[in-house]
Length: 111
Length: 115
Image (cartoon, rainbow over all chains, first blue to last red; front, side, top):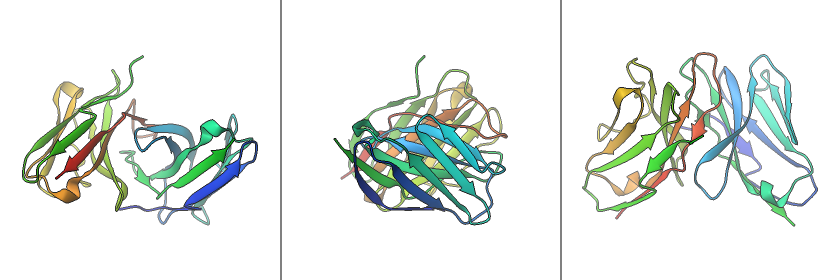
């Protein structure tokens, strides 16, 4: 079952704008990861943030983590049409590293 | 290098038949995971293999589902007596290590349709 909730469920923006999506979860975590999925098939790992980290950057991506609020956000700056995809947060809670996913945010970047 | 591969990419089967889905992980990756994605349930963990340890089967939805991993590499997910609610995309992922946590590398998935 899904542990996380993401909002918004869908987001439509113009190319060049920033896109922000949020993820909330219910339990303690080892780390939180963000994945992108194009066309409903394989997922691509974007960024991982550990439970003792508060912010992380990777290129145009910025992730924050607030363990007191059990929430995370993903910011995509200067969006491009190629960023159109579904974005999922996922948490890990134990050494096995199995992922528990949120419901995802569908992002449409209009050229 | 080669990524995670899965076969078949699509499978249509009649209710009640058995199906086998295959996953070839990235060479050298010790951890292998199966997930499924359906409209109603989203992305769900099914089973996890790590080296020679006993698999974590906690996500398997029923005893009709089983999986094995031979020689620490290729894995097969078997669904017996398929039901319409088994229709989903089945995703395999591998990872070079566990314990400290890390990213998983996903295959393109197998879309299973049970008619």
